[in-house]
Image 1 (cartoon, rainbow, N blue to C red):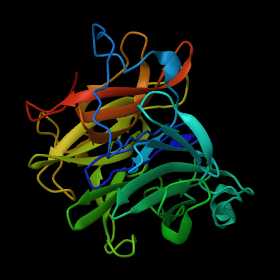
Image 2 (image 1 turned 90 degrees about the horizontal axis):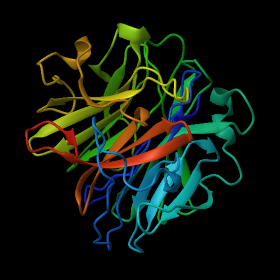
Image 3 (image 1 turned 90 degrees about the vertical axis):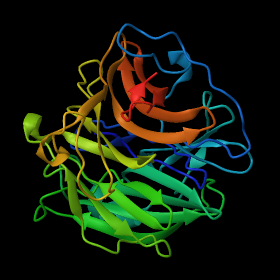
Image 4 (image 1 turned 180 degrees about the vertical axis):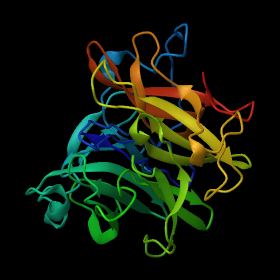
Length: 340
């Protein structure tokens, strides 16, 4: 399964998205970060009867993960694939392939992909203090033989990243799966969320100086329904709440996909998440944010960002024409996110 995960956020609280794979299904994750220097509103199409359509015509959208922006005014997209693909855009709409994070391969991941120079999953990147912080996953389909690695770059360009090694890993002896990393930077506190199926979503504290965990994992969301289908976690802070976004059900089956985006909130990034009805996310709670509507099928693999036009939801979806990247604004005026 293809995994797109990860997001890049920057010091202006901007985020980026990417696609990924996991559990023998194609799982696209997406995240986007706006350029520091740009101040440009983004147009949207007319809404459907159920929810707004993604920004831009479908022909201009691609199933890639937006990542970070730099001072040159570019959006970066990092996506699942051999070597992790990089694309850039000046306007959050049209993207150009520029190369690979690892143009010479990533042999250190072979024990987890179970092949030579296999596809890498779910890149998530954050830009802070002049550094691109990249987390990415590697695994084999339907397996807990999984790992998350950490790398950095001063430019975000192809071949510029330094790999710093293994962040965390799982095997069949664990009750969760170490894929789909997503970094939350909350002032001087960093947190990494991860997980897919099994016992769900976990979070751990991360050192600002090393990028590596400083605590054991804590459970923050879990499902028993539909085989425990929950993944693609994103913790996003807005106002006094932390919002935990996840993707439920099944991805990467074309127009048969059942993916949908859910949310809960808490006053802590490490515990206490409940949905709008008060059901704990650790007990299967999750308020629907975006599901299949009209021609848009299986939205998920999401990430969030703050751009100049407000909070932005980025996600992957299908139509009868193929797979695409969707971008919509979010309205938090009620205390809960609504797609607008």
